[in-house]
Length: 123
Image (tube, rainbow, N blue to C red):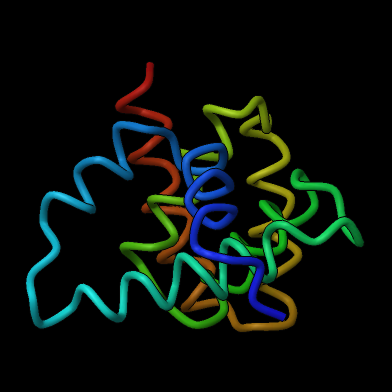
């Protein structure tokens, strides 16, 4: 399923933006470099690059899953990227409301606070 490091890098930059990817790459160490390469090749090059779902749908699914799992740093990152790509705050809200029913209120409560901070920072 791996789509390759180059494809993964291109998709990662398209989804998260050059500034985020550049910061992330600059922070890599010898210890975690292989893990970063693995994520780039298999998550971005292997899954995010597939044609079976539109990127917008993948964005919304990712927000829902990260909310469900309580992955706060990644949730903030993907909410920011979704907003940058034109996903409306109302859509983020609806995804979090829907996720609350299936993943639990405490997770969604925290996700609303985190997403709300992102929105407040953006005005």
